[in-house]
Length: 121
Ligand SMILES: Nc1nc2c(c(=O)[nH]1)N=C([C@H](O)[C@@H](O)CO)CN2
Image 1 (tube, helix red, strand yellow):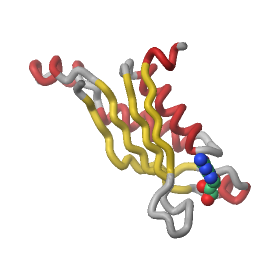
Image 2 (cartoon, helix red, strand yellow):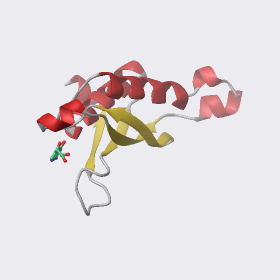
Image 3 (cartoon, helix red, strand yellow):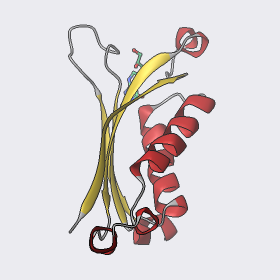
């Protein structure tokens, strides 16, 4: 299976379950893996046949930065749904990292995998 990936997309977001977190912006770092048949783009050299990682990055960044969320799980679900529906990707793995959330932990977060069949059922 071919993939398009985006690593360490950094977004400043209102994210957290506690009251003090709703008053500040914190950094979320997002990793995405998306199933995509890269042969049509690779054989034609045509961006319109590719899954445009710049467009995906912009859409994800807008979604995560423009709405407040309590849980990283919610962000992961919304990001997965956006990619599956707006970009018609058949399968996506979404990792949401919230570095700095837990003192003495290098990183914390969640990882989910979603596909078209799961999203529509
Ligand atoms: N599984 C999760 N656990 C926790 C979350 C979360 O989003 N998912 N969030 C918090 C707080 O917001 C925390 O990040 C504050 O430091 C705690 N646990």
